[in-house]
Amino acid sequence: MAARFAGDFFERALVATVRERYQRAPRPLGHPGLQHVLRATLHLWDPTLVEGYGHSMTHPLALVGNTGSPYSRKMRAVLRYRQIPFRWLPKGSRWHTGIPAVKVPIIPVLAFPDGSGAYVEAMTDSSPQIMVLEERFYGRSIVPADPVVACLDHLIEDYAGEWVTKAMYHYRWHPPEARDKAGKLLPLQAGINLADDDWTRMRDWITNRRVDRLSLVGSTPSTVPVIEASYRRLLEILDAHLRTSEFVLGGRPSRCDFGLFGQLSQLTWFDTEGVDVAVEVSPRTVTWVERADDLSWFEPDDSEPWFTRDDVSPSLTALLGEIGRTYAPFMIANHRAFETDSDVVRYEVDGVTCEQGPFAYQRKCLDWLRDIYHGMEAGDRAAVDDILAGTGCEALFVD
Ligand SMILES: N[C@@H](CCC(=O)N[C@@H](CS)C(=O)NCC(=O)O)C(=O)O
Image (cartoon, rainbow, N blue to C red):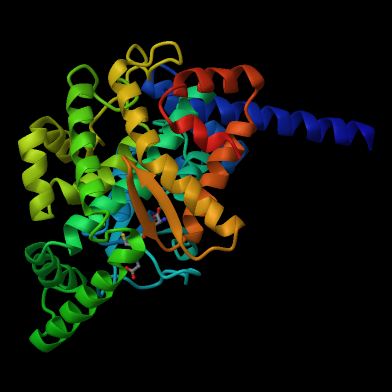
């Protein structure tokens, strides 16, 4: 009994070590041939160790999305960069079948097949989707190995998903020409041959629904200048950053690149006013966004890793300052609204008072961020504190 327990314990420890090694290492073994043999052996031993190896183009994952959805674009880019086989299923199209139902009807939906290829598991929300992919597929990881850098990565990814999305939503549904363009084009993603009367009905439905949600997302007459100014500043910061760095955290992409890419794929390529501002302020960012859409060709290089905790560049500090100026007060106020049972989120950016309704998902986002921060070893937490000092982001962790 004791021997079996010890044996089980040993095997579990070994499996955990190998898994850790595989997920963290950008290249598990230098030689591709050797990697192949090792992967095949490990897969025979325990398929969960190298699940990616077990998936082939015959049983790819499925990603239900829409090219007009920033989070769908984010996840498609993640899957492409990670070289994980998947099928892209345009939402509502004739190809969108056989995907298990999800609790909240949002996109993207990521679905996993069983051994027969049938989709048996489906999940929403891009940040947790990324982490599940990290657990199940080795290599080309997008989570920095250093917990301090990983914490910054998580923070910047969340800023993209929960703050930059305000700019995306605003530039899509606020200017009348943008609204008209999105209303006309988006319904056709479900089917190029949609009949004219269905197309008109969907156009009106989508447009009205989105415009009604503008104030919920935070784009109101008083906040328009705040949102527009923060978008411009983000572009200026990225423009400076991309002069010396290929990606947000250095020489290889991580979660925050994909988070920013998702929102910017719309803002700098689709939504007319957003595109015009981006081309004026930072052509470099526009081009970076186009490139980030498909990084399957990019080989992460060990000699050009992510930044280290001691090597945070001034332009990255500037980005953290922007996050502390906008996202931090908003996320803190949103969290507080739930704690105080208030139905208004009120916060200040640059002396302007912004108001919107509370958002439950964003409350969870801040909880996750705080859990990561508080779960770190004291020395790592102190390193994060040092990097965030003076950026305004430190306020996120004073709860
Ligand atoms: N937190 C989610 C947000 C996903 C989301 O908001 N998706 C939007 C489209 S971009 C959606 O599906 N909205 C509902 C709808 O279109 O009916 C994520 O990170 O993926």
